[in-house]
Length: 252
Image (cartoon, rainbow, N blue to C red; front, side, top):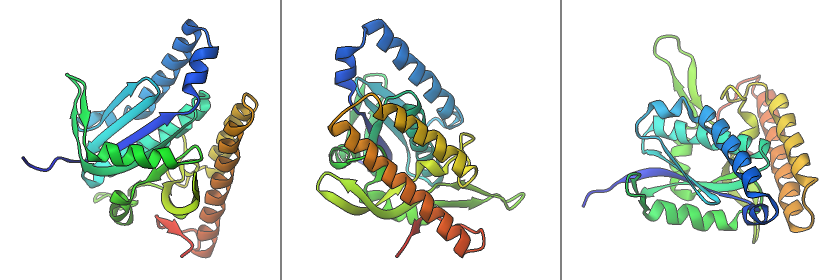
């Protein structure tokens, strides 16, 4: 049988079981429907591509797309929207983008392959609300993160803010590429209105922090740290390079 290499984004909603136990079923259904409605709005441009697929099951979200430059851009933008919208609706999550063999058959609910296993296992290690890149897509991040130039006007499209820096895993801070989702505006533009976007995300995290105690607050604290470091690195690179930014960013 031939290879069926795809990008896979697997994300897990944090605290979902506790939320089910303490929220009236009808209210939770309304909250979840509102989340899905806003996610559909963010995903809308991506859905023009037949290869872009999204599935929700219980506390997990699965997004897949083809192994191309455009597929990389779509799944990266989807990941940024997934983080922003979920935090706004107080459904914080963590997830991983990977690339390997994968079968996605929506009609008979058949989803399996190494890409999903890789994403799931790394997702289990993440200790903040964010999207981490599995090593299987690191080469593509280096090739595709800075986007492409449009032939007709020379404008750069498809830029995605990946950063290489230490991030919180359960075993400690370990250097990984991750998506700096606070550097993408609500209009899906990378590097635009970053202060506004950052402040909005911080306000959502503060609201989430006000609803939890103990371990869940560790996730909030570590997320705030990563977002602030990402914003700081972006501004430092922008200043150092006279306003020009080339992703992915790192301090190496």
